[in-house]
Length: 212
Image 1 (cartoon, rainbow, N blue to C red):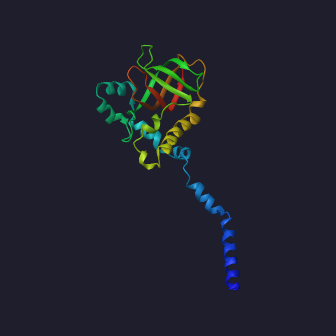
Image 2: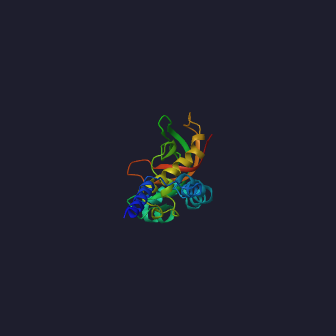
Image 3: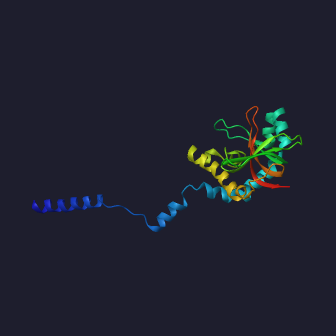
């Protein structure tokens, strides 16, 4: 009997010792976990040149064409230039190009922008985001080849949308001049969500040139 008690004592001691141990992943396991982690910035960078810009180049109409058709026949504009996720209640987002003159600027705010006249009447027709902070997720929402169902949850989907804004700011917008923009010409390719009545469309560029 004492021998059995001694054996059980050793087993219990071993179990207690194991319960206090902390399992440490090997270096390979840690690398695999890191490789599989959600990285929206990397995901955006990998498709930007190969898919994002070419898609919008092919899909876009001039801002005048897109906005006029949307006002006349939203379904036709959506079919030709627009995209909207089936989930949620996001507005239609349209691909467009802009070629106009800057008539107003806001560069003091982090959510900087310029107002642009595209039809020559010296009045703003569209507002172009120039960052560094960009409101909304127009770039993500204009792309037919990305889908909410490919993400685990709404948080990842939102982070993915934000990463498009971060990418375009680092790639283009932070290099733009920030003074005396009014009167300069602007050309851009990008996207904008259908605005509420009476508001300027907020256009987010994926290519942009300011000069003149």
